[in-house]
Image 1 (cartoon, rainbow, N blue to C red):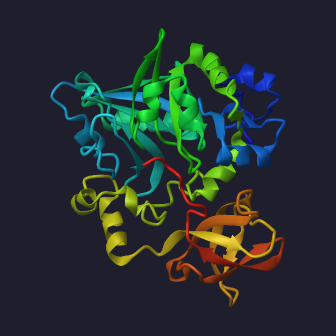
Image 2 (cartoon, helix red, strand yellow):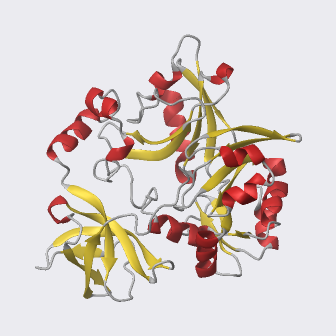
Image 3 (spheres, one colour):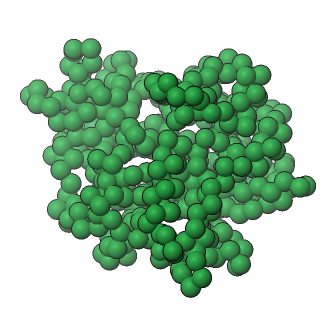
Length: 378
């Protein structure tokens, strides 16, 4: 999970709290981030699955996109993404992807239409940390004269995830626990304005809480004071999302992969598949019609050895058919799991493959994702 860049690292508003909690800090997306706390990755992972974990995701990019007079903000943004943004109801959030002219994924992101009637000319965006500078510049350039983008660098972002998340949050923001999955709204608690969405990156029920930076530590401590909540680092965040079959940008998806190859067709509504109007639309439409040459798949290695990113995938005859993009040992399943890209002819569940690990071909098979059932609130 760590970066190799020598550039000076930025700190999130929770940096001092991480150090006080004994976190092991690493470089990630240009920030000093906690990879784990004294309990360790295994216990943090299982605690999130069984109770509730609190993650600092303040390194993510938050922004408000506002339409110029006379411009439909959803229609304008749909020229950059294949998601059905126009169908968003007030308070509803959607996962989509920014695309390049070849249909490659510049980034994946979350888009929300605000609740208030006077804010229907706006969209709230959350993008990946490592891409936020490029994303925001791309959006500003592409929508120049149609919309303005305001970065919300003065806000932190907390993720409360796990089966106890709603119970815990209800003690502090009772109405937030009533939110539907992939919905959000603003709440004012005292003099602090929170933007809370029911979503997450673990496969569990949970919330992402945008809070002013100067109030972030106090709100994080409020959550951590609850008996069900423990601090969770990047290590467990990675194993949790992989069990849930969720992509990590720069690993499982990037500018060389299309949403169709990445098995993200579900994120493109029928209207957008047929009507196009976004970068690379013709390429994606051809892949939908004829099928892509490769697909992102789940992989279950036999034995106990995990297959890490970059591991070569071969068919039983020894031919290279793809590579692993993410791999780990699943704490929940007590077995190794992985995902990667293989030739479409070998992408069916149950297909036997071999993984070249430390020079040895280890048996595995293509497996359905997610590896564990998702427990999002419905």
